[in-house]
Image (tube, rainbow, N blue to C red; front, side, top):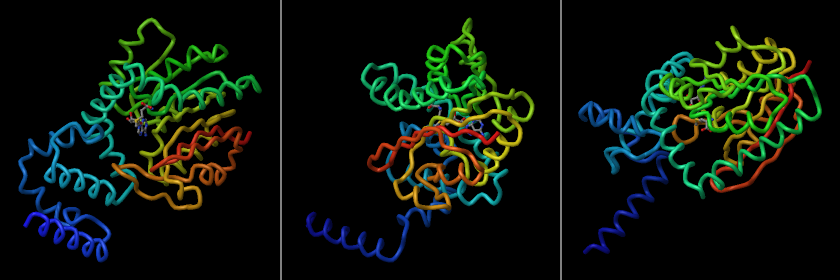
Length: 296
Ligand SMILES: C[S@@+](CC[C@H](N)C(=O)[O-])C[C@H]1O[C@@H](n2cnc3c(N)ncnc32)[C@H](O)[C@@H]1O
C-alpha cells in the first residue's frame, strides 16, 4: 500500500511539473499565509537567510510567499524598502551575520568557506595596489560582521581608510564595539547615500556576496553613480552566479531574494575595464571573482 502511494505521488509530482513551473504551494501560498498566525510567520522570516527556524511544508509556504512578494515589488524603491524593513536591515540580516560569524569561528569552515574564496579577491586588490598609488580608501559595500574588512586592513598597508557600510544598524553598532581601537570605520545606511555625501576619490569598492541582493537596475545605477561621482574608483566583486548568467544580459531571480547577474556585461556597459577576473566553476553556482577599474 505504502509503495503504491509512493508511486502515485511520484506520478502526480511529475505530471504537475510537466504543466507548471513552480511547486504547488507557491501558487496557493498567498491564501494559506493569511490563515497562519503572525507570530509563526515572524519566526520563519527571522531565520529567512539561515533556515534555522521552523521547518516543513508550512514554513516552505511562508518562505515562498515572502519571495513572491519581494520579486513582485513594483518599483526598485519598494524593494529597497522591503530590504531595509523586513530582510537585511532587520532581524533576518542580523541573525545571518551572527550565524556566519559563529560558523567562521570554527577552524575548518573559516579556511574553506571564509578565507579561500576571499583570498583570491584580496590578491587581486593587492595586485591593483602594487600597480597604482591612486587608491587610498577601501569601502566594503554590505560589510556584515566586518570580518573581511578587518582582514583587508592587515593586508593593505598603503590604504589610509577602511570603511564598512551596511543596511543593518544593529550589526554596525556591534562592529563599532568589536573593532573599537582599530582603524576601521562603520557606517549604517545605503551605499548610494554614502557615495553621495561621504566618499573620497581613490576608493576601491569591495562587495562580497552583496551585489546578488541588488536588482539589475540598482546595480547599473550604482556602477554609473560610482563612475560619475568618484574620481579614481575600482570595484572588486566576489559573487555567486549560475553558469548560464555569463551568457545572459538580463538578470534573473535566484533563490532567496537574490539575483543572478552577468557582472562582466554590466561593468562593461558602464565602460569599466577589467583588471583581474577568476571564475571558479561549481555546482549549483560558479564563483565570480573580479576587479574592474572605472574609466578616468
Ligand atoms: C549576504 S550579506 C554579505 C555580508 C558580508 N559581505 C559577508 O560576506 O559576510 C549582504 C549584505 O549586504 C548588505 N546590503 C544589501 N544592500 C545594501 C545596500 N544598498 N547598501 C549597503 N548594504 C547593503 C546587507 O545588509 C547584508 O549585510
